[in-house]
Length: 250
Image (cartoon, rainbow, N blue to C red; front, side, top):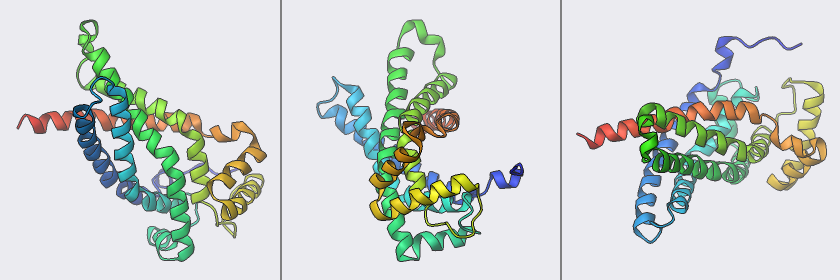
């Protein structure tokens, strides 16, 4: 029976996670605001949902250029495939195999992160536009409402993109068969998936998951993913709106 994790073990990978999220999130929001303004002024004012989706997707794509290597580093730390942040960075960036794996994982993660970035902020913007602007929902304006709207957007985006997250995670943690630990049956299954991934990339991983676990395999962890991203996006977007309002009022 596996031993329970200590508090310290829950925060393994914290530093690369901060490096992954802070600059990429700033790029995401900056590109989003710029693209949204251009799209709404350039003919999409009548279809704001499309403008929000396209702007969110553009912001997420640019942010992913920083996020991909940092996420690969975090994944190898948290899965036990690296003993330290420096070791994980070396595996990801300093070897040809690591760079190739990160590039493959990045291309796969676009299928997860771009829709996630588009959906979460589009839902947030629509709820603000149609609910907060309505007189009957006037009492919901402000930070609590923005946090709730962001959480709903994060939850919907997380559920929709769980299959792509499963594929991306398998790709980023492959290649650690030797001496790493982990459960016997799951380890054997992961090795089979990893072998397919090495040969075929994201499509090979998806086929292997389908063969091993069926359609349900693409939704492993959907509950924990939703529980993670709902409050995270709620805090993220409500804090951003508050800081933006404070900056504009200066």
